[in-house]
Length: 98
Image (cartoon, rainbow, N blue to C red; front, side, top):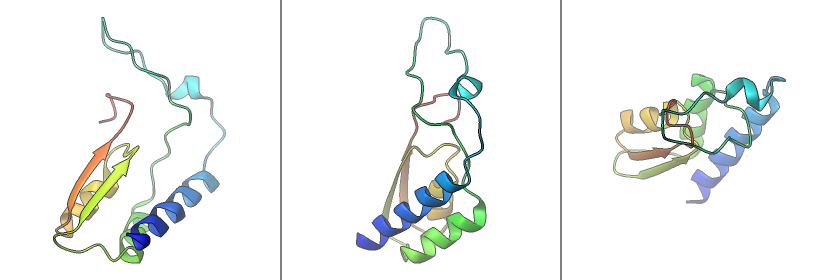
């Protein structure tokens, strides 16, 4: 569990350090008719695939383990973990991205 926590902290640090200067308004799309969703507090910046693999390596994710990704975006961490045989689940606030 500690390894997974470390991998998530490293991943968040990398994402924050690579965040371009854009406003939230540029990221938020119009919700479907009759539905309203909360504006995100931060913008979406996808984690590079090589960073995803390194995070999963650091956490030593393997077959049969469980991985949760809060704020999964396009799901690349969840997909990479599932390819390794882990049971992976992701959540994101933006229904269009999911």
